[in-house]
Image (cartoon, rainbow, N blue to C red; front, side, top):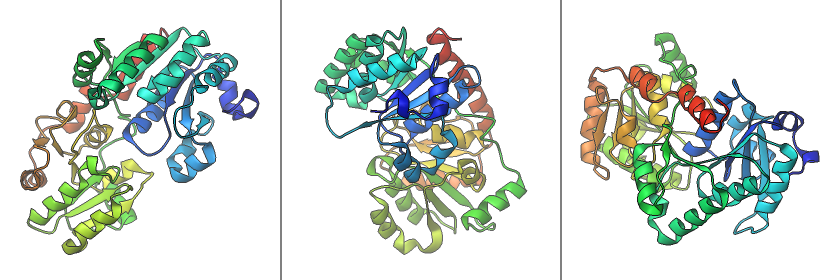
Length: 371
């Protein structure tokens, strides 16, 4: 565990009176991106820090270079694998030294460790957000979350109505809802020059349609379904995949027969640049919460095609976007073809009304009594 003496100087100076967001680890993922962006947005109104229970800064930045822009706002607990019953006490000691105004935990691990630690340290403003509820289908996990909530006594929040309903059904407590949001000043529509530059940077041609996916390459994200859909999609459209993960080799093998129609771009730091290169965004997941990537893509003016799972329907503009059943490559291929032909609508306007990060940041600060 970091001590006050080993904290980054900027973080130590900003700690008193800060909002500390606590995540399990800082690795590429929707929850982690959301915590970073939320802390960044709140920093305009209140000091913020992000505490990762696991890892250390050097390793995390090397694995995810985007973290470099958040240096000075990051803390690491260096938690090892498995249960650590002493970690809440070490975190409580850290919070006493930092004297934050609020501690905001995200998902079950941070709730279990940092929630009780914040209460033990006398931090009055304690928030906890559930970003999905599938894990609460396990009765043992639901009992664990109920016990952690009883110990920490935070304001309980869900990031989508369907998550709030599922949390209430599983643990008997109704969360308040604060919808996920994205930075609409960062994610903007691209003009023709910006699109050409983005495609050149990614090695994508200007004379072909490009469909994009940004996801961890793991089975739950359904990237294999999109590759299967490309085999059914007429024409020469390209599927550009941004991300890394355990399924990368299997996906490359699956796409081998499609020539240059499937491009693997790896992890990208410049997501606005990625969206600028696209004509259509695809989210083929088997399970989701309320995905930020859909909101980011639509904020950039892109129509989207997505599977109707979890909170996805609430994140898709009904006028410009299309929902399809999960596990159905044929339906996905048909929707991708229709999406490339265009449906009209105003995806950016939808995000400005429904998914603004600035609104979410203010609502969270208000729940912490810091509005």
